Image (cartoon, rainbow, N blue to C red; front, side, top):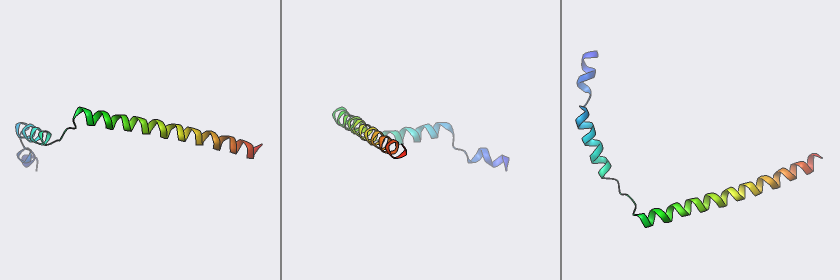
Length: 68
């Protein structure tokens, strides 16, 4: 069993070659597209953060009103 473990492994050279081939298949976005997508993600994150904060504050005051 221990003898076959080393025979089943691919040499590191082949692994790196395969990794490089797969890495070259990635389609990277251009800078303009990446900037637009990043801006959209940041803007939506800020808007959702503000909405959640506002809802949290409203719920907090509502619960405080009910408890008192």
